[in-house]
Image (cartoon, rainbow, N blue to C red; front, side):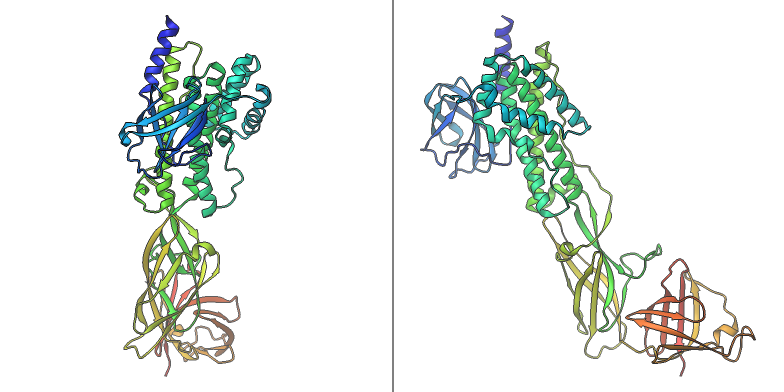
Length: 535
């Protein structure tokens, strides 16, 4: 009486249980239209391809032979059907009332093993043993190890009939059953190809849960144990692929362009600080993307890869929830069974922003432009990881210089789309040659105390790379020569001078007919020097 009640209750539970909503097709036999007769085998999961039908629901009721069944949507026009091992041999009519009573003939055949059950299961067992060695110590890995141990222990003493049932199930669904062993360990590097493969791995393992649930539901003890172990493998690999995709498929939300020479930036020096450029002079600029991991709000992202991920995640969670319902019922009704429930997946609600230096592939996704009548973007080219060379030229006769404008950029890749702009100041390429007198000297924005003997010093830049410093009428020390001689080099907007001691480097922030503004490249000093041209 208990056995009868058990089977009746379980069948009632499972009849109302939605199977699985999967995102990828499998390699089993298909039907291309409603009038086609297809061949299938007992214990086989088949895909029915309804090319002329747009499936609007995730689940459809059907009549297969004389049995009421459930069909699950696996793609836009595909349904999954599991042929049980008790389905009558021969032609069976499948009717789907919600699809205008669409009818399909399925020629069900008995499975004949050409080898012993042990021989047939060799590939299945080999894959289990090989893949179990890759399981880590995560909770999913521990659960998989535990369920594999239960299965292999029972398999050792299983009867010939129990092994035969499992062998039949494996033979007719072999390509699908091998999918849990599709892991991601061999995917090295963060690139779009590997990220697409991660989604494929995720989807394949989600799809595997379909036969696993049927094994847990319909099989005898050995088949149930194999189903749980198979599901544990699928969940482990799916979660592993999902986590890796989540952390590697960074969503770029903005760009960060800065002066390449400045290593340590002041607090006030952010992405809104203008780039200071000299006309028709190539300047090296750092270029980064501001990235974060995928979060729940990215569900609104219109990129196909991201849409696919969220569909796959929903499919996984639906699969796991249905499987957990079956497992929970088994745990509560069969004293010898105590399976662990599987976890669902969710993305975090927020993620930390990180700066990622742009490599060549990332840089190719940028487009730059300038919208100003007196400026031309001559070049914006990749130099090395995290660096680009920028050259902007002044044209025509601008009313004032430097010209204030913006460098506009757009970015588009498989995951992200954004645009923005960076303020720029473009000055004429004037010569530093000539004599200059100190006007002011600040440290971290505060005026520095200067003696009169310093303010009358004259700095003369000669065309042979020689720098002469005239102490002027007032000398700070009588031992100092009236004129000291040093050297200087000028590379784009970087000025390096050396007089007696170590060389000091400065960034030219402004250079025109009357003014020379320098900023110490060593920003820990915070020095900002302004000179006026001596007439």
